Figure 1: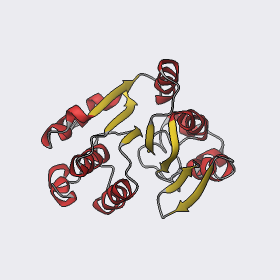
Figure 2 (figure 1 turned 90 degrees about the vertical axis):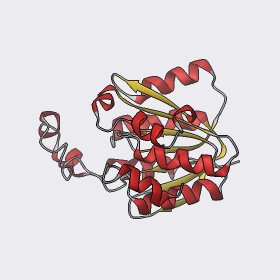
Figure 3 (figure 1 turned 180 degrees about the horizontal axis):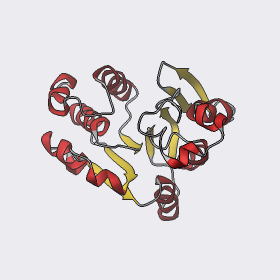
Figure 4 (figure 1 turned 135 degrees about the vertical axis):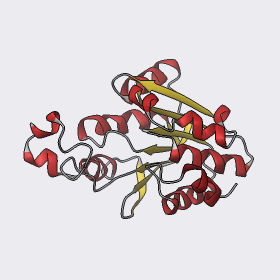
Length: 211
């Protein structure tokens, strides 16, 4: 299947466009990224594109993805899309009650050896959550592995689904209007001595862990 075939399956289901899918799948193949950690998957559109690319590469590979329990209520669900391309067995799915941070802790408890080649982070979009997530992911990311941060310019104030939530209304104004993932990338990732090869596009921030 091509990415265009996957697009026909997922239709307008959010949250990955065809152009983004082309970008990330090309990146996965170019860098031979076989073991992927995805933080935040929603309907599983991005997961489906990445799983299809691993299938095309024919080198094995797997995806471990984590999101909140309310993702079980989404239509379509991630399992539905993965079944459409017969790739559900390649993906380990975790639904968490509070945050992917707790599952990452459990991963470290079970086996602290680095195991992932790529982390695609499209989750909380929060300094508080994703700042800490970066340091946990760092422990699980192989030398030479990559992190891609989605929604570099996202803010609570410009999010249609978040800006009217009570918890957002009571935030200080600068927390609502600051792109928090950009702060994580600029202040934590780019200053980290073990990361280099930084790249920013309109929506994504890339960083590679040094060998």
